[in-house]
Length: 132
Image (tube, rainbow, N blue to C red; front, side, top):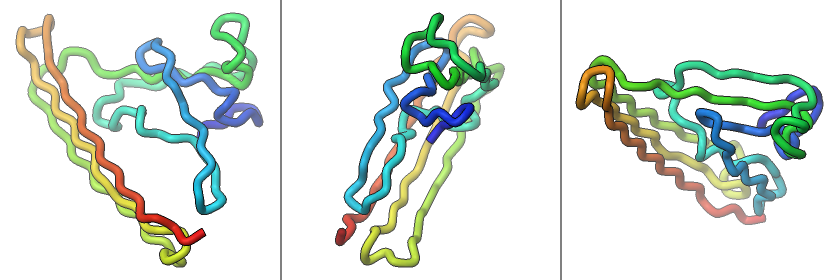
């Protein structure tokens, strides 16, 4: 969840390279709520993050009342780079809430120096069902 100046993720606009992202707010079967973050690029792909605090709705629309987060990704890598991240969530009451796990993979390589590159990203997430 993103929260700026007390406004939740419904009022915080998320951009990747200046393009609006569809942030899905969900209410899960275990009674918890939150925002899906599957749209976020892996850390190795991020060059910088720009944050505009406060009302920016006049520039960006009603979903930017709390502010704007713009994630800038890297452009044309100098050399081939790759990253794999694994994650696991083991909960104390896993029979009620369910455990989760997955991985994130990213690879980028230059094709024409300083002109053209290619990158690929794969994300897998699996959450066990809860009993609630």
